[in-house]
Length: 288
Image 1 (cartoon, one colour):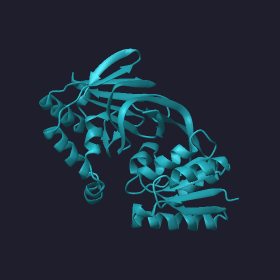
Image 2: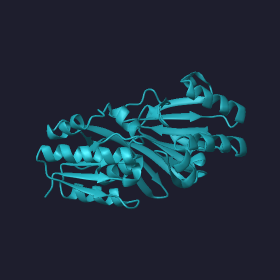
Image 3: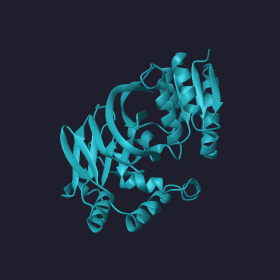
């Protein structure tokens, strides 16, 4: 039985392929037993992650985008199988939050030396379906913008596609009210982010007090449904001045319940529309 499982998404680009070659070369030099699997469809990384945990594989090396990493996380969460994240162009946000090296030897040496830590995860429940997440969940405005994105448009324009869709949603859409409960107090907002990390959408520091190991989530709400005031709040978020606005509420907690049906996105991927809840699970993922 191999000690390491490498899960590689070929759709993640030529840079990722080079990373794969570096990983395989380094593990071969160290005489480590490993197996490499190439994903072909959504769900492959999740299934292989589950199998790795069941077979007590020491570590899963994830090479791909945020979606690949999220599937692996959902497969191994709560087990003693550790995760090695190889930063690529589309998966750098979590890597930055964890302070990971971009150099393959340094990344893999941590696992070889058993230098690991346990991080917290969020868990989203929507329409009775549960999903772990490493970064954040958005409810309301941003999730609707993600929902409006076509896959072709996203693949063509990359991260910019989200901003274009958000602008279109703001101009042509209606800011819908979302009712949420945090610590038995009800709030009403048009946009909610429940975050496990500081960054949102790349390098925007939206929840500056978030820490991936503290066992809590950070909740940011924009309360206004006035389009002009909402646009002002978005600009202030980009400028890192949003916490001073009266239209912005910032809380820390372990659980939030969304009372009415609304659009939901998880780590930038559209999840669905429904009644949902989000909670933090402390020390549930082993990371090298």
